[in-house]
Image (cartoon, rainbow, N blue to C red; front, side, top):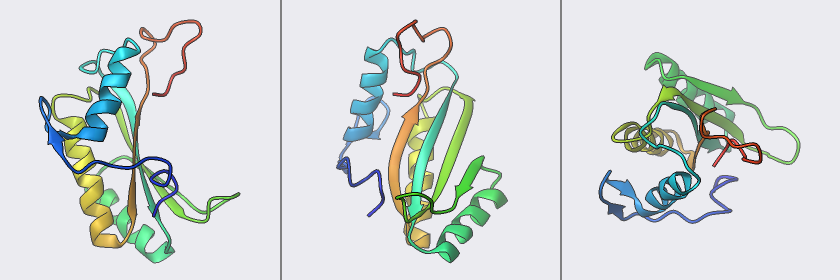
Length: 136
């Protein structure tokens, strides 16, 4: 089980209007509640973890071949897993990008023996207030 998935459970039920898993729909709603326009272009990250370097490298190679923007991170500090951060730049989360990227990440970890650990959306400069955090 991945580092972040230990902190949060994931619901397997899809819900309207974007056909997201319930937990992802709740996270999207929380982002909107903080004042985010979820249809506006923004940066986002999706977290994948692997306990084996060869599996992580194979997943990263597949992402590279598909020209999916990502970062490969070796274990460090107290995190013993190899991480891949799939990145979205200037893309609106809905209607399709969030669902499609979650599905891509889950398919990738299923094929390479990893764990999908969720996602984060960054607030745009317009959405950030003086006391606001940038990641939701």
